Image (cartoon, rainbow, N blue to C red):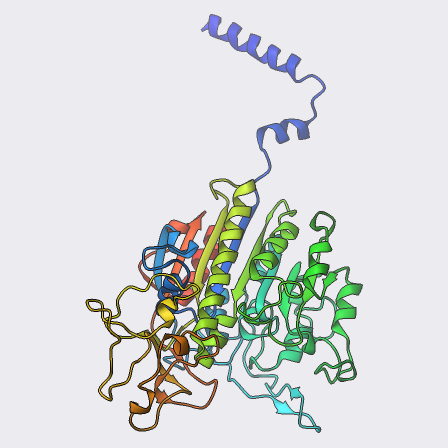
Length: 483
C-alpha cells in the first residue's frame, strides 16, 4: 500500500509540472474537444414516384445503370396520404416531413384542424388576399425552426418559386399555399409578417425562383403592399444574386447570408435552362453548402427538385425525366462536397425522398431500350416486342408509347387507328404529351396515391427502413440531428 501511495504521489507531481501555467479552461478544452458539426441535407423530388425514378434511370443510364439515389444504402417506403385526402398535394406532404403532423390539403405547417381557405382577390382582381381567419388553426414547429433554435445554420434551395408549397412548408405557417405574398414576407427578418420562430437572423440561404412575390406591382411584381422585399433582405446583410454569374461571384467564405431569385416565377425546366443565366440545382446546392458549412455547429439544408412535378402535370415525360436527372446530379454533387470534410458522413445525414406519386406508368412488354441518346429515344419511344423487336400495336392497330399516364390532356377520342403512323420520333420529342387513359384539362394530370421511395446515408440513416408514414420521417431526422 505504501509503495502504491508513493507511486501515486509521483504521478500527481509529474502532472502538476506538465500543466504548470495551465488554466482550468485549458484543461477543460483539452479534455473535451468541441463537438463536430451535425449536418442534415434533405432532398425532396417533388412528384418523384417510383415509376418516374425507374423511367429516369433508364433514360439516363439504361436498365443496368444506377442513379446516385439508387446507391443510397438505407431505404424505406413512405405513405403520403394527408389529413383529409387519400391523394395528397405538396403542401401537407412536405409539411408532414417538416413537422411530423398530418394536415389538410393546401395547408402549410399548421395544426390538423386548420381549414384550407382559398385566398381572395383584391379590388383589381389580380392579387391574393389572406382569408385564413385568426382562429383557423395554429402553427406547428418545423425542422428548420428546431435547427435555428439549436444554433445551426439553415438553407432552402429549389427550382420552383421559393414561395411554392414545398419550400414554404419549411419556413412559413399559413392556411393556404396560394398566399405567396404572405409566404415571402415570412422569410424577411424583422419585417411585417416575418416568422419569428426563425430567430432574429432568419434563413441563412434561400435560393430559387419567384421574384414576382418579392417586388411591388410597379416593378413588375405581385405585391400590393408596395414593399420591395429584395431591398429589405439586402438591408439585412444578405448577399443577393439574380443570375448564375452573380451567384458564382459570391465568395462563400465571406458570406454569412445568401439570397438568390433567378426568375420571376419558377426556374426553367432543366431541358430548357440557359446555363449562362440560370444555375443548375447542383450549383445552387453546393454554393448553399459552402455558406452553411462555416457554422461550427452544423446546418440543415432542404433541396427540392420541384419541376419534376410540373412536367408530370403537363404529361411531358422527357422534361420530367431530365429534371429528375438534374435532381440526382445535385445529390451526387452534395455527397461529394460533404465527404470533403466528413469522409464517412459520420456527422452528416442525407435523406432523399418524394412528397407524392404521379400517374406515370410503363406500358407493355417492351424490349430493353438502353439510355436515351441521339438516334435512340430509349424509354421515351414506342413499345417494341422483346422477342421480335417489332412495334407493338393496340386493338385499333396503332403503336403506343412505353410511358403513359393514368390521366392527362392527351387522350384520343374514339379509335386510335388514326395514330397508326406514330413512331419514336413523335413520342421521343421534348414537347410530346404522353397519352392518358382518362382525359383531363391541359396541365392537370393529378398526383397519385402510391407510396414513395426514401433513401438515406450517413448519421442515423440506418433508422430509415420498412414502410413508414411521412410523419415518422420528421422524428427520425430530428433524432439523428439531435434537434
